[in-house]
Every structure is written in structure tokens, then in C-alpha cells.
Length: 103
Length: 103
Image 1 (cartoon, each protein chain N blue to C red):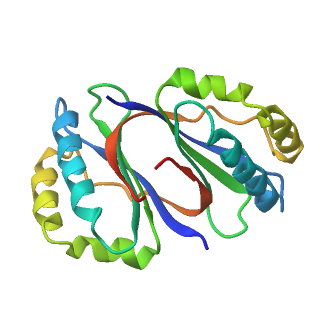
Image 2 (image 1 turned 135 degrees about the horizontal axis):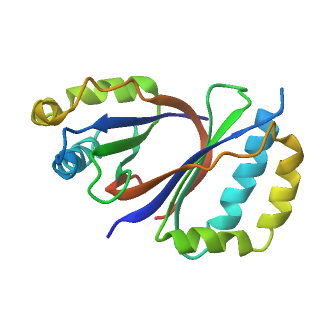
Image 3 (image 1 turned 135 degrees about the vertical axis):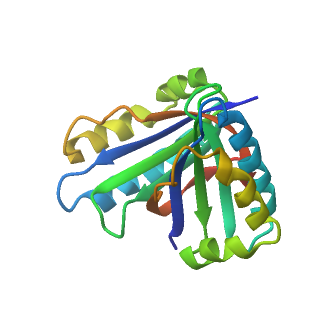
């Protein structure tokens, strides 16, 4: 059965990419306990870049949407918002068919 | 230490997205044994779409580049080529900082 994937960019204001990435790494620890979370990766376009990417895989879109209710997530969003250069774009939605993940 | 990420699209000719995805799922099984392979996911933009995305994480770009030498990979590329609507674009390179992967 396919899974719900989301690949999206958050653009930090100048010089704040690494701080934004740290907050998102904190989010990955929180959502790791959420129902249906399979993958939550945080990347930068390059070292120190202000463009931070989040790549997520969930059992379903519903599980993803519910993750906003995980305790602590709203607080992290509130920390991240002032660092953003603009409104986050809607990420790219994917239907993840399968593949390999190292244990 | 950050890892090497690559997120790229392969566009199949009309109606061939699912066949292309199957070939790439075969590739994921081959590269799962390659040195440094951490993640190799195959997605479609939506059910039956001809746009197929591959999301990879490797310990290093060098490990990724060497994966073309994994036995069987070149044969799969040869199977995939006639299904492609055009030359594959260079994927988006990312510096993967970390995150969560379910076991």
C-alpha cells in the first residue's frame, strides 16, 4: 500500500537557516512518536544555506495532518515562524510506492 | 555528519509511469546492498502518474556515484531508458542533516 509523502522547503531569513534546521530536527524527534510517521528528514540545500527542506513519509495524509496535534509541535512552529523569510509554500505531495530504508 | 541527498524526477512516456516505477523499485532492492545507501524511495506524483520521483540518501556523493557499478543496475537503467519521455533532469542535491526514520 502506498504512503503519503511530502517534500517541502522552508526559507529562513538571511543567516538563520541553521537555526531553523535545528528547530525542525527538534520537530523530527517529536513526530517520531506520532501515529503513522515513517520518515521525517531535515536537509539544507548546502552547508549553511537558508533554504531548509523537510521530507516526510506518513502512512496516510490524515496521520500527517494529525501530527500538528502532537504535544510540543505547535510550540516549535511558533519558534520557527519568526525565522521564516516568507509564508511556507505548500510542499510537493507524493504517493510513495516503496523502496529501501536502512535500519 | 550530514549525508548526501538527491531528489529527482523521471518522466515516463504516456501510460508507462507504473512500469517505470516497478523498474525503479527493482533498483532500490539492488542498491540496498550498496556501500553507503541509507534510503532509496520511489514515488509517483499521484496514482498511475507518469512522473516518478526517486528520493535517495547516501553516506556520501561518492557512494552514490559508485552505485552505478552495483551488479544489475546498468541492466535496469537499460530497461528504463526506452520508457523515458526525455533525458532525466539532474536531481535536487541536498545536504541531509538528520531526522527520523522508522525501523
